[in-house]
Length: 276
Image 1 (cartoon, one colour):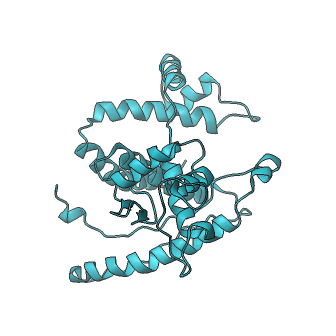
Image 2: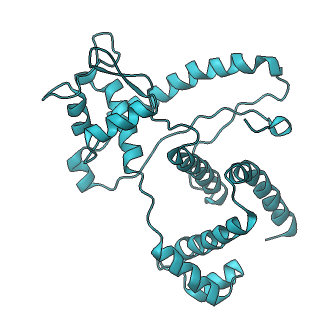
């Protein structure tokens, strides 16, 4: 790596770190705790992504790539092996249930909107919706969680009505923090893929629309604009993904992967940040 290239990578890394460190400081983490996590992540990525001939990277090569001692690499690998996997099942199930409620004709009204649902019932109920979209997550568990975060409301008539299209935990909820990491991971994976790909390989879509001379007073109007237009775009994407999703039998016959797109507001507020 040339010195100009290395300097550019370091500057890019600093830009990436600013929002991440902002979240870490607000959550009470120190640089020593984060440094330990960085060691683990260096070993994890070097081990899994830089092997030769399809095999995991050996310990000596990981040590050379990361600058860590073989002993430290071994310690971090042991920590990775003992680390409990991240369970996103309930979060993903909640999103699938809300999406199905808005797109599946069996749970929609004549005007195309989601139909108020009885909690229980063989067909056309919330329990039936969960059986179709939530896998083995219990309907009562999902109902409790969706009501808790305000995505679903139970009326005086006993019927459940969706108030949000997507599952969004409250900002202080551990699930919300985990989701933020997933968003940053997805965006980062796309950016790095585009940088590292061979020229003959197509890029993954990643684009921005920005203007550096916007009035701060227009922030509410822009936010309202995004709530309508970006949400409408996401719903069209969601409908396409649902229409082209592999069937249960297709998942056994073909390789499957996660696809999607993220839309997010851009606002340079580094100079104006303050704690709530």
